[in-house]
Structure formats: C-alpha cells, structure tokens
Amino acid sequence: MIYFFHGSDTAKARAKAFEWVAKARAKQQNLTYVRLAREDLTKAALEDAAFSGGLFAKRLLVLVDDPFPPLRGKEEEPHESQDEKGAAASVLEASLDMLAASDNAILILAPGLAAAKARSLAGKAKVEYKFDEAPRSGAARGFNSNLVNALAARDREKLWLEVVRALRAGDTPEMLCGLLHWKARDLMEKGNRAWKPHEARVLSLALISLLQDSHYGSAAPLLLERFALSI
Image 1 (tube, rainbow, N blue to C red):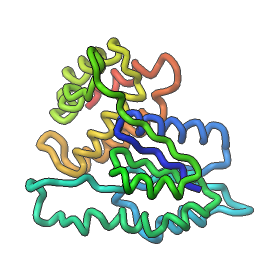
Image 2: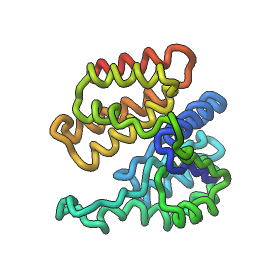
Image 3: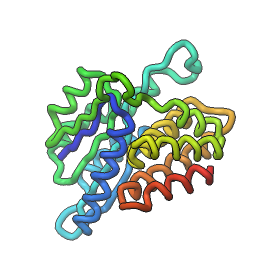
C-alpha cells in the first residue's frame, strides 16, 4: 500500500513524512524500516520492498525518498543526462501497481512534483498527503534562503543564528529540519566547494535522524541548535 507525501511546501512535506514514519515505528514494533534514496532505486530493490515479509518475518515500512529528479538548466554537466537522472523515477513508475498491492507500507515522498505526475501517483495511493505553501501576504514568512545558504556555506555560526531567528519567529523544528534536509539533498546532486559528495550524504543522513527526533517535545529546538554548531 502506498502513502504519498507531496506538495509545494517542501519543508513541511518532508517533516510530516518523517514524523509519520517515526509514529508508525513507535506504534508497531514489528515494522522493519528501510529508506530508499533516488540512487538506491532499482527494480530488485522495489521488488524486495513489495514482497519482503510474511508469516515469520516482520512487515516493512519503506520510505522512497525524493525519487523524481529536479529539472536542470544549461549549467547541467554533460555526463548527467536526463535519461540517467530519470532512470530511478521510471523504475518507480513502472512498479507502482506492484507497490500499491503490497501488504507493506510504502511511503513515497516527492515534494515539488509536477501536478500531472502527482495526480498519477495519488491515484495509486491508499492515502495522499499534500502540503502546499500558503499564499504570501503581508508579513507572511517565505522561503528561508538565509538558512539554507548558511548550510551550503558550512558557516556554523551563521546557521546557528538563522536557526535561532527562525525558531523565535515561530517556525517549527520539523519545518526547519525538512528545509535543511532538502538543501542537503540539493548539495548531494549539484556539488559544492564547502561539501564533498560523501560529506553531503553524511549530512543528509544526520538530518534524517534529526527529522525523526524533531517532534519529540521541548528538546527539539536544542537538538537543532546543537546540530547547527556541529557542521
């Protein structure tokens, strides 16, 4: 069965998806959790996700994390062909019926997905969770570019300051973690002088852990501040 998380509010969609995973794992101790990033998606991996488990084995909770590649412009590297980038997405789309029929919980997290493709996935899902950004007006807070730029620059003092400012302005730890994890994935794909590819992947995994812990009470803001100072 498929649970589909998407929408234009990338940070909120990510935060809510990982919160759902954490709650499901706490509620059902027999679940085995597996996360599949875009680079992990193969036909064999999705077949395992759909068919693993049974009478004498634990059920699976599988998070398919951001399987659809972002569109790139002219700055795209020659070796990064659209066919290569879209291979994982094609494998996923070809496996949707199999995943929908599975007894395992298959959570597909795909924020920012084009409307037509989102409708196609929603039609296969048991439950759809859509999180769109609210229309901006007056003093409404928009995309926090200072926060993600501080992470990209690996400026821990600046990142800590932006985290504190955002928390004081009313942003939730879940939302900030989701936004930072989106940027970590972006760094993995595009590269950056401050972050080597393997460092960006470690950063992504650290933020996944933080996302799963970020809704646990009053300690969440402190955990986020400590993370900012640790980069």
